[in-house]
Image (cartoon, rainbow, N blue to C red; front, top):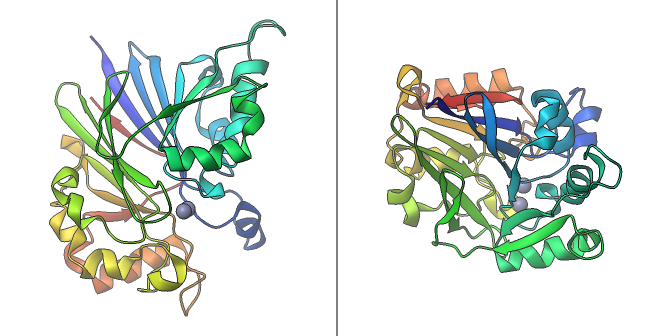
Length: 293
Ligand SMILES: [Zn+2]
Ligand SMILES: [Zn+2]
């Protein structure tokens, strides 16, 4: 059987979309990722991780139009608006607008999240969960594995916001793989390190360079490295073996004393300061895709 999994980093930036535009970036938005299981070239399951600003534009840019006819579920990391702002627009298009016929209405999209996160989603997207019938809540509990298609998805609690989780996704194709969706963390989840170690691919949040989490509520490059967290992850970068190590997402940089750096400047600074990690820590690109077989 010709099985394959793709993970695409739809958006990688934290800063507001319009703010990025003002700074001269053509495109951007909030962090969102799409995991796809394909068999014989056909998508069997899409799983969207977060649905903040810019998600729809990213789907338009990086997914074929058939996305709208493929099986879809959504996992939300936490209730901050930047991680779910476009959820109900997406579900409205998916359920109400994309059938063959104007009156074809599809079943609601299942949205997995913790109970605390659901309070925020329900407030914002109330119509989708009620009269609009395009969204349906499925509760998850940190530490309890959820099965979705071929994927085992483990939510792990992080102390970023009420109900916030990161996700560890495991699946077996010709060999076993592990992907970590690790964005929006205030304290680094060192207590979960044994669940996180040796990933095929890890996306970690680094909102700033400097260790100013007390001001931002977000993790940063200095803490990721200097706490020993990245070393304890036991990362390997061997693309031929489908081991891609860690990629940083959610970067903003304007909170740093020297302001926002370009990706090239940020990577150069990182490699100079932390040469022993330069091969295993990279910056994700918008639309970057990793393949697993
Ligand atoms: Zn957040
Ligand atoms: Zn965020």
